[in-house]
Image (cartoon, rainbow, N blue to C red; front, side, top):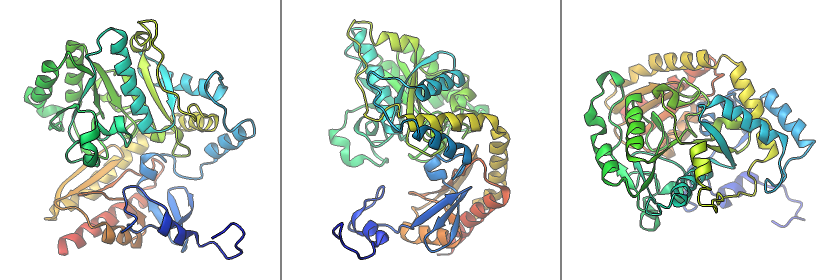
Length: 434
C-alpha cells in the first residue's frame, strides 16, 4: 500500500504477512495475538480480552506495565534529550545509573560498559575476557568453558556459548567458535552436594587451563536453555577452580538479576563474586532496551596493560539517556518496594499451586525458585494448540519445548497468580487426557 492510499491500514494482516516474530517461520507462522495496551499485570488484546501476564515480557517487566514512576522518568528525560552519542560525550543519567549499579553489586565490580541489549552485553563480556589475556601476552587463551543447557543470546559470540546440541543455534555450529562444554549441573540442593557433581567440569578446566580465557555461566538458573536450577555449592566450586587455573569468571545475570531468584543477584546466594557480570532485561523494568557489563579493577586496568588496550566495542545507542533515566527510576522503585517479601510470596504460592501437576503422567518435573515456576513435560508442547488455549483461559504464558513456565511481575496479586497456575494445571490436564 502506498503512503498516499486512503484505505484503512490493516496492521494485523500486514504483521501476519510481512513481520518476523522471534523463532518463527514466514512460511508457517505461529499464532500471534494483537495487543493494544498493557497496565498493571494485564495485557489488553485488540478484541477486548484481558490476559494476566505470566512472562513479564520475557522476564523484564518486574513492576508490571504503565508504571507512573517509569513513565515520568521517560517524559522528563525526553524533554531534555532522548539520545546523544556516548563517544566523547557524557551525561548525567548514565553516570547516575553507573553509580547505582556499582553500589548495588559486589564491591570489586567497579567499572561498567552500558550496552543496548543482553546479547551485546555478553559479547562485551567475552571481548573483555579475551582482551584482558591478549594484553597479558597470553594470546593462546582464546576459548571459553561453559556448561550444556545454557543460553546467553542470539548474536554470534553469545551463540557460541549456548548449548551446541540441544540449544536454539545448532544450525550455526559449523561457523561458530568451538568452545568447551561441561555437563549440565546436576545438583539442585546443597544438602546433597558431592564433589562428583563438579568432577567433569574440573577435569575440563584443568586440562585446558592454558587456552581458556573465561568460564561463562548463568548463576543458579539456566534460563532459555531449559529452565533448570542448580545449587550454590556448584557455583562456589566453579569460582575456586577459576582461581586455581587463573581463568576469569563471567556470570550472566541478564535473566536472574534484580531479584528474580530471591536475592538481588543470584551470585549472592553462593557468596562469590564474578570477574565480569552481565545485566539486562529487568534493568529498565522492561520499558526500554538496555544492558550493562560490569567488571573489576583487575580486568579493566589489565585490558590496557600492554599500552594499547582500548576496549573494542561501541554500539550507536550505548548509554542512551532515555534508557538510563528509566533504569534509574526502575532501580529506585525496586529498592523502595518490599520486593523480597513479594518474591517469597510468589515462590510459596507457586510451590503450593503447581504441586498437584506432579500427579500427571505427562509431567516430568515441577520446580520453583524465587518468582520462577516451571512444569517440565515429557514431550514438547504443540504451540499451535497450547498458545491459543492459554489465551482462551485468560493468561499470557509463552511455553517452549517441553516447558510450561511463568516468571510473573513482582507486583502480581495472589488472585492473579492463581489464574496463571490454574491455567497451567488445566493445560497439563488436557495434555494428559489426549
